[in-house]
Length: 578
View 1 (cartoon, rainbow, N blue to C red):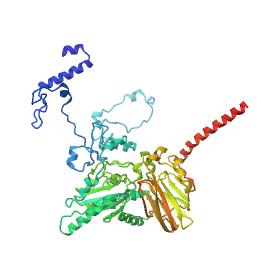
View 2 (tube, rainbow, N blue to C red):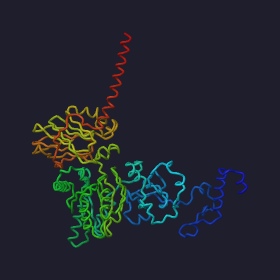
View 3 (spheres, rainbow, N blue to C red):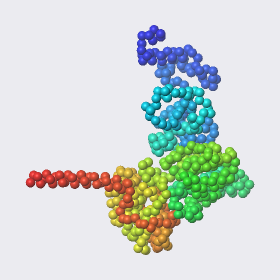
View 4 (cartoon, rainbow, N blue to C red):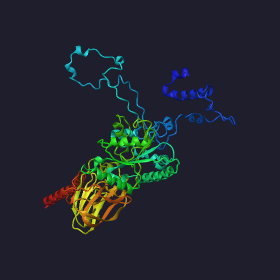
């Protein structure tokens, strides 16, 4: 081999090196030979003692890689946490082998805290030419001689390693590769959380049912409410008979109340919430809390209530629909309770949490707090929208009323997603207030022209959907009829809400027949008015002023200007020829 090495280059020696290693493995002892449970690698068939082919020998080595766990169990079980690395941001099982699979992460390089970014906090006081050579030859502090007590570098707590998806959401606000999430199975609430709540014995359970105040009916988990209510009735009956009965406590948490107008009374809001929750199947509520994680409203009362209900060893489950604000709420609770830092990923993207995340050290004693993946509501309109369209629909600022004063035969559009028609009414005037994201354009006009709106303006002036092709992708445009009545023009009497979008508040003194148009499969409900107040400055007919409408108008006017220029040029040529 030494003679060959002298006469050949390194690239030509690679196959020879591989052959030498393989031949060496036949004679030397393997590193697994001292384990009794793992057999020694055999390169001969024990039955007929015939040597295996060379390809079998070379391409079937022992593999130390673990199989990828494609589930949403997260780190609920402590044994699972020790066996598999779980992302502290979303709860997915982490792996560093395949970026095309869920949970991929990059191991950060180790940095010496004494020398990393040394002097990064210092600022330049002058340009280099202003210093003479004597100052440049000054003393330099050796980084190795810096003591741990030195105040020159402020050491910050080390941040935990998260998966690439959480890193992209935290720094860029979007998922880098959304197709990777499709490899994960759907979150089965009954299998993962429901069976733990249904246990007749064990630790006490507290269910935090988190609901979005701006989309109450669309984010209200009816399935969870029914399951927990049935469990409470069953275990309460068993407990009264002297049997073992672990009765869960249900706390309804209405988040994002800062998005509602400040003029709304908390007493009226709580009464409205309890009524809607009872109609949704939650008839065994222990308490109701109205909170805002952004403004720190109501967190103290919520924490005190949860601690008293859970006891020293209870389990607290945060459950709710996608994008209802569960992770944001838990992070706010962690900061509120003695400044404990939690690392759950927050993003205005549905389905941020992928697995169950056990949050340590937030609640006192041995009480465990679990963040769960958002429950998918296929009847929410946001489930059909792209990320760009979701950013337009998502309500991120305090809602402002946009009111129309209309009569029979007129319609109001909320973007290209929902339309309200006044078909018949016993009065001359109906007040219609649109409560939706301020980024969504509105349009008011005659109902007889509404059919042409879909063909001419959907995907253009009325976005979302963005683009003409997206209109067909969202589904069939269907109609639902509602018979309503009211007793006042000064305030709204009823709401007609679309899940994941917003609602129309209608005020009248009489009766009316209304039609609501939206895409097939979207939940549309009739309810008592959440916000009775309306705007006293009415919107005018046509499109509301917005960036979407102005850009669409500019794009549509460009072809007209070009055709007009061509027509003028052709007229000039004809005049010259004459």
